Length: 166
Image 1 (cartoon, rainbow, N blue to C red):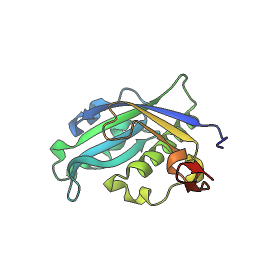
Image 2 (cartoon, rainbow, N blue to C red):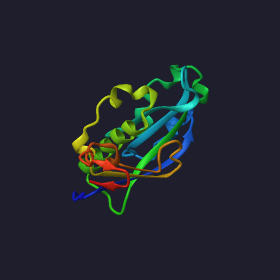
Image 3 (cartoon, one colour):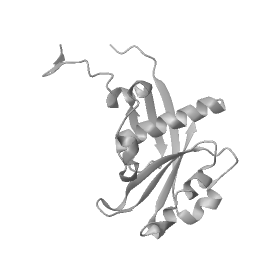
Image 4 (cartoon, rainbow, N blue to C red):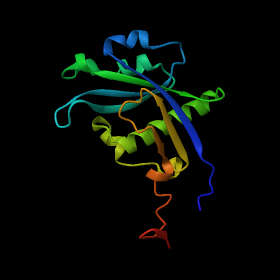
């Protein structure tokens, strides 16, 4: 039986935006969150999820512009989706930063974008076991709901036999 308390992170996604929209993407000084980059990949094709990143202690527009997506092949067709955390109350900056970090890591691990290969290699398993993410709005190719309980080793102790647990 799973007994640890689940930690819910909700993300409201919007997009698509173009690279030329980055200067207008920022709503205020604390416009932090997570973003997805879609574009052309030489192996996976056109309009595929390339990268998931985070903007923490700097705005989404500023952080995304630092990554030189303009220098990629077919940058005119690059699409950006931005996700902002939301919930019933405003968290402290420290909690907000931690949730952005946890959400980014679990999203990368589960979806395995082509340009996040270094981050996919290892999962901070114990930190993510009780994280539950709900993606709302224009989340594009991301799963609408994902759980660290499903994607970490937390349930690996079960032995499964046909339709019953032993």
